Image (cartoon, rainbow, N blue to C red; front, side):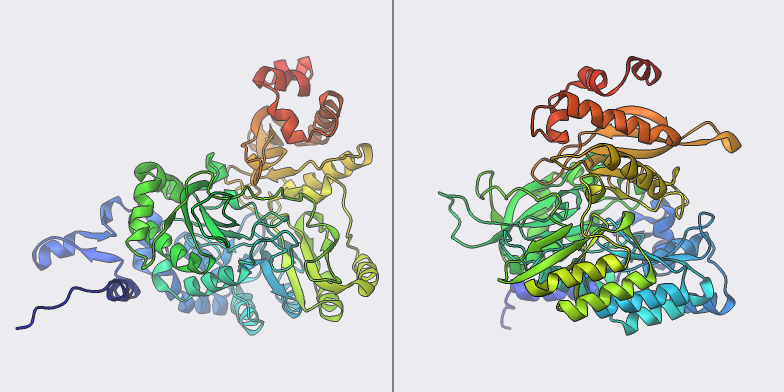
Amino acid sequence: MKELEPFTPEQKKYLHDLVQSLDLQAVWQGEGSQGAAEAPSVYGTPFEDLCKEERLKLERHPWDLYPVLERHATEGRMPDPGDTFLFKHQGLFNVAPAQPGFMCRLRIPACKLRGDQLGKLGDIAEDLAGGYAHVTTRGNLQIREVPPENILAVLTALYDAGLTSKGSGADSVRNITCPPTAGFDRDELADLSRYAVALHHHILNTRDLHGIPRKFNIAFDGGGSASVVGDTNDICFVAAKPAAGSAFEKGVYCRILLGGITGHGDFAQDCGFAILPEQTISTAVAMLRVFVEHGNRSNRKRARLKYLLEEWGVEKFCAKVQEKLDFELLRAPAGTFELRKAVDRQGHIGVHPQSQKGLFYIGVALPVGLLQPAQMRGLAEIAMRHGNNDIRLTVWQNLLIPHIPKDRVEQAVSEIQFLGLETKASSFAAGTVACTGRFGCRYASSNTKEHAAVIVGRLQKRFQLDTPINIHLTGCVNSCAQHYIGDIGLLGASIGEGDNAEEAYQVFVGGGSDNEPRLARFLAGPVPAREIADFLEHVVSAYLEHRKRGQSFEQFTRTLDEKRLQEVFLTPAKIEAFR
């Protein structure tokens, strides 16, 4: 008998993908049928050690929930706690008691949206939900106050518009982000948005990549002037060119950053490997599968990629990834690539020239991400009439309308202003972001969007800045607005208990990302929300008084040790009060 040839790498990958597609989550262990029936496990974690969310996903895969949605829509009722968790995988969030009905979070891959789609979303928000939408800090959209009887109508309307909410919550790969200027950024090394979109569709159509151990964030950064805050993601692919003297051939590669999760105190770090842009999809899928197979399914607090990297080390993780690839990860030690250009922190607001001669994009300032249906339809019309039916959402809760000829820019700006929106913003408003807050989130301790408007209004009336100050307001420790990377970060808190509880904030200063990654340091708190605008007015005044000319807020705070930080920004009475 002829000896069988060993499997080729391609055959091994095919068999691996085939097994994965069968969704063999529950592997029965033990000898004989009796032993097998007593000891199920999920990727090696015994059933008795699984957290409650893993048991729910084992009982019913999140993609098998549609009959349940139909029943709830017919009966017009909200889900029980178990189904509330599973509904999130369909993009439907029960936010009671903060708001009635559901919040529906979409997936807008690469943060790219057609104008006609935005117009349709305005109709959905007006006809089937609460009459407004929010741009999120992942360049995404949320529609709120969807009655339970309308959930199927909303999902169907999204499908008809070429959109989906699937996999936008709970244990899913969240919206895959790109810089809003991808494809027309004058400093961009490569347009990676097509890979982000392709990965989005791959994940949506691959069953075993849903119900992963915990949420997962992926970003693509083309190396241009606009930020996607890539170093806060679990994985970020960053376009880069080899430095002079590098062993790499000329061209564009992608550095790989891993393990970002600033709410847990870490930025994504360069893992020391690089790939070609066209290899990013296979690499991301391989990394996801390693996470699926080895992520923590017992302790939700440690079920993020950061903790697997801490347990194994980056080298072991990348070795496991390499086993699933049919090409080599390229070793890229420090100094292999040129440093990326500085990010334009206000490049997402105002009129800017594109890489295409004679074309411009307009960054529209939204009040902490809020959009009314009429505004959504109006912006859609502007994009279709003056641009190329193209709209980009940003992680700064704003949007861009690109591809506008020079002779139409003035008219487009006028029409945007007619909608009650602006294309200019102060150095405070342009970089202020706020999570949903107590207005629409059960976990939040403060009304972040309301307080953000008050803070920005106060500061921009008093100060004219030559460098921007980003203010991030987040309502709880989940840090959806990433307070740790803000020049000023505000974390919702409370003073007192029960009926006497008062909204407040813990104040952090000196955070940064991209070229200057740094976690903000605690300054003071809890500061009552009614005093927070006064407090920050004093902080900004002290910064302007003590800084060197042209020194940014982040650069200035880096020069201060902990004692000096409090001496500069706090009065003696405040220092004593916050000890």
